[in-house]
Length: 475
Image (cartoon, rainbow, N blue to C red; front, side, top):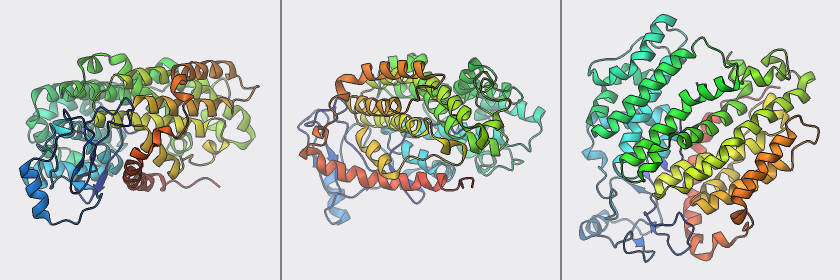
């Protein structure tokens, strides 16, 4: 299974949460006057007194006691710096329970990139999403373990949600690399039960649905496009739905965000389909097939035939067909993101979406997908992370990459007309901002922020690259 996830951003040092924080200014709308930065000694106020108050005496005293040299350095959770709602209340490492510390260790061990995402979230939402991720990682580990007998695996998947309420349940027979989340599941389930009931209900419900869905696809192949949507729903759409419900439950976002399951599902499907398209060669080497037969059977006798150099042109047409289908989710992505208000939630959701369309642009009509691994350039990734901080900026990015794809569409491609049609729709939805592809959004007031965020993004990208670099292109 492709790993679940909807967000990125932040930095991890060692085993404990470390975050470069943005104040909750209402900067998502793109106003250059509404940005506040947390530095190592003070807050650069944006003038929005509602959300950017000065440091309280207690916080000011902590900074004085720390004797740190003034600089725009990253902040850790042991040095609270502002009195914003949810921010000073976050626990330091010293006040965490032993099991919560263990959960953060597992989070960093199983996915550094997703650990970075989670630790940028505000308030109690951070812990809820951390536990949500670990529960789904444990479930995913069961699904991926080919040494577990099928009948045993089916029962484990279908009943996994019940183990959340069994303090002593653990599974010690897994051979997967992430087996520690199963062997020490009592630590995870304990922290799950420590969450507010509103978070527990969401996590248990999604875990139940995902486990049932995974069990269905253990022996079922992805044949039709409907199967593809269903599979992607179980492994990624449900993640989007669960996260959206957590966002609303935290009251950081409006209730409509969690209630509109169709949009949340579409967010997950866009990311999952992008991963499946990009990872064709890796999945083939591992004996997995996620490209829908309804599509690839129009171009080849078997899915593996697409990797043959003799079939390159038909392979490209097949991939372009799938990319065209994945792009249908972009209008939903823009609508979903336009509803978000909290800056940390917006970053969490927006960055992977712009990375996805950049990945599709890199993959479109690109023979290298069938020879190795197509990656976004590191500098390009940093630019995307720096830019995707408000809905107008995201629209500019979507406009830019949809136009880039449009310039690569072969006139002879079977799906060319459909591709141009969805690209035209995306550009229409993004057009007002897409025409503003100037440097105005990096006005002088943003320069210090851009430099600061670039450092954060670069460190994040280095962590992400560690996983990507393990793949060796086929010669």
